[in-house]
Length: 394
Length: 149
Ligand SMILES: C[S@@+](CC[C@H](N)C(=O)[O-])C[C@H]1O[C@@H](n2cnc3c(N)ncnc32)[C@H](O)[C@@H]1O
Figure (tube, each protein chain N blue to C red):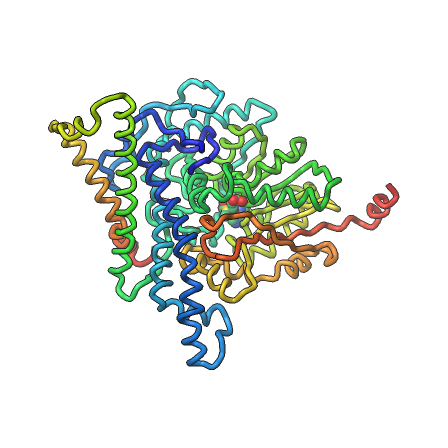
């Protein structure tokens, strides 16, 4: 099954490229539904009893679990297969992108030129001088060769083209035909919680291909929608994609730790699985920047990767940190997001936390048998006292 | 079930030998996607100036006691993929022949490859082998990067 929405910059696949990509997708589905479920069996039935017999107690932490699971043959074999499937996923997509890059780059240029002449197709603002943060240049995140930021020529959009197709295979289509389930989750939650708010300006941080940005544009077609990322190739791609799909978005190349937007200019600020790809130092800065940019009464929502409670599940979700170049994912998962939001200046009473079930099927859950819950940190910037009174009076 | 849009152009375009050193192939024509309403005239291609990266920066974990086992495992899955690709291709072919009322199997058995066809096949086999041998080229890339990658 392959149902990714076609748009002007989505790669076309030759017969063999398509077959190769679908193999990887089906292979990953098989790992998720038939193989990874054996890891808890290896743990609970083989390794845990041995550990308890030797130590007279169950393991205290995920790190202790990791120590003995690393030598379990079943875990080793699954782990190796999972890593290999991730490598093959990128490789199978890069084949198509490399073949079509000259045409894709040209098409993106044409779409950008078209947007420039129009007033309602959004815009693209790049900053070649922007420093790519160390947490991106250190290793290629989720082993996408070249990461989000590397350019292989002028006006290159390859990284975006690779990511758009790759991510679809990564979750076996589990993010929906536009890879947009996370944006739908956050925007639906926003509307549920604030049915009467009609945001005039919205910002999506760490937008990559704009996949989670567009649902906000669909929900609030009258809002001025902005999206930022540090990486130029994904932004060029995102812009072309948004023009092609007909949702106006203003993309700019900026670091979410400190942007060039004015104080208090957004009603809503969101991010989707961005924070865990930053760093210990950057995360509080992003929250502080969100606060600076929010109008009084404005709302921020940061959706993050699953953070299970169970110690064994924690060990399972750490797989990406150790095997998929997600160095900060552990630090972020352990961080007290609510506390950090408070430290960033948000009123403690206006900070909330929720978890959303992304509705993934067993063939789409890479690391967990129990489910994928995406945590969301939400905070409202308190209005100055005078405005609060006005609101009450209204 | 929405079947994927496939390029009209046959896959041959990609089946040429793909060595890492080879210059990046430039597509010959700009195709506008089928779903796009914009019938913009063909624009100048924007080729890449270097091949896309194939090995991610960052150390690859070792899963087994003997690193050779890691390589072999990856090669095995790559082989699985290629066999699956071939089966899909064959399936497509057989169905097309059947659909057009041709003598499918018979034609296939009687086929004699010309030297040109043999050359094309050799090139596509070389690309195939390179793909299955990917784990080795990764190791080589890592060694070349002086353990830095
Ligand atoms: C996993 S992707 C997010 C994908 C997308 N938002 C989604 O919902 O699927 C993380 C993105 O955040 C970007 N990013 C990371 N740190 C950033 C920062 N400090 N400022 C802006 N963008 C950042 C990365 O370049 C990358 O494109």
